[in-house]
Length: 109
Length: 203
Image (cartoon, rainbow over all chains, first blue to last red; front, side):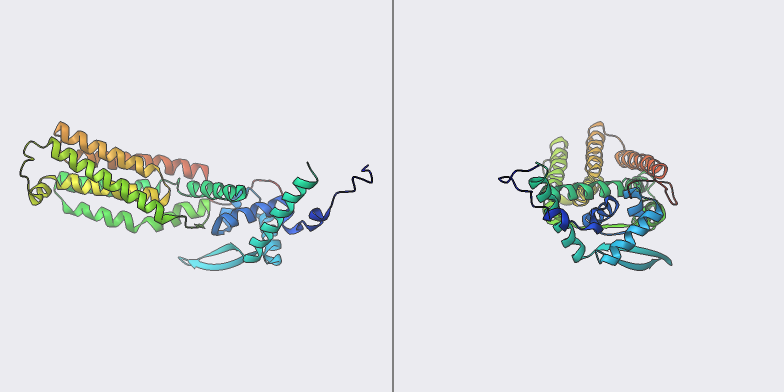
């Protein structure tokens, strides 16, 4: 129980955490897309180790949030779906990073 | 900065895994072997192995790597710096080989550049090949190419000292690279089976 001289710490950073990114699977997907220019579904599947269904669901969520862009192209008549991190997604990662840093510095020390 | 380092590590890990398919090793091996066979058998037809090896790279990547590993495009790093370092090392390597040949050559005194090239063209061309491998190794980050270039250089020097057939270092290096490439390719195919992989992890 904190005393009057030691008020409750500021919980704002926790409230500010973006639930779209906070899920480990989505954070993994965004981290990989932040490290490369663009990648397809198989690459993300192999790197994250998620199931196809899980990955598909999380990608849809990130796409809805506008954090990743989906482009389709044909290579030797075979369709290829490419995922790219958007500017909004990059900003969201930066915000998430700052909030997490604040939480660690203020609340978990 | 720490976050950037972690992302770089993530990228580096994925990049190296993407190039562990052995394709580049096999194709460089084929090109060097083609050059060696051309000289050994005096059949210029083997020169076409160069064109073959460079022409099929993308096709092999699409046939072997992409279905198993997935398609990924990487960010370009500080290529200019790496290229400059590569050119520097490459020129040093060339100077070293040419210098050794001049030092060891019994009739080095008064050897005109044209005569020199006629006599040592295999060594000069092989050295240029080694330089290209060093530059490409530094540019692409695939460091084992630098080791291959050193292997070729050592083989060239030994061949000259031991007065072996000029095609020997090329045949040896080409075969060695192909073998390494095939081993890497086998490991890659085994480690990355084609089709969906169902691994349950964090959701």
